[in-house]
Image (cartoon, rainbow, N blue to C red; front, side, top):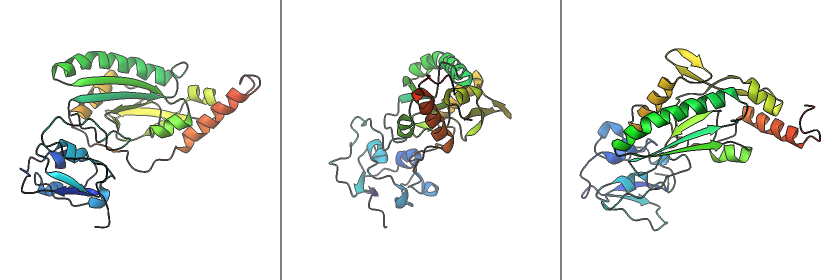
Length: 254
């Protein structure tokens, strides 16, 4: 095993509850042997991810290469932390973080339209999720600069994430006149695919269904821990936006 970080199972303590295998989104464990935790792909484990160890109710998981002082919770209250920037390792099983990432809420029709519908959906489903014992956090984050976009590993506008995972399984885009006007470049923004149709502003039914599926695990998690590079489309948007804002006429000539 060349990898210097991966989980080590104490099989004398383990009761084969299967939580670690079920919740690992990196493909480290052999799912064919679940609920027994067999480390099949140690090279896929993310350095200093303690996601499965924090979830283990008996503290049966330690890590080769551990140098942070972390110790197994041993059934104590789960530590609320993320294994990496994508949020895929969040260990609070009852906390739901919904993030709305967008380019513009002043002139972009699809960002504004999606924002309004998402507000309605969240107002509807949050009370039900609260009754079920979930803590719901709803954040809106403007991708105002390329640096912010890189921090959030932003691929397309608008994006909706639940606990760090995009509710859409793929990125489809078409030309966005509003964002093109903002930057003075030809910008493509997201289109949402639902029941065989494409929408620039997604239906409320699609948003509610996708969010609930993400919460209750009915979709395959798409971890964004892999290496990220700002898409060329967004690079051109930010460069054009910066050029227009620095123009002496305030961008009116561009």
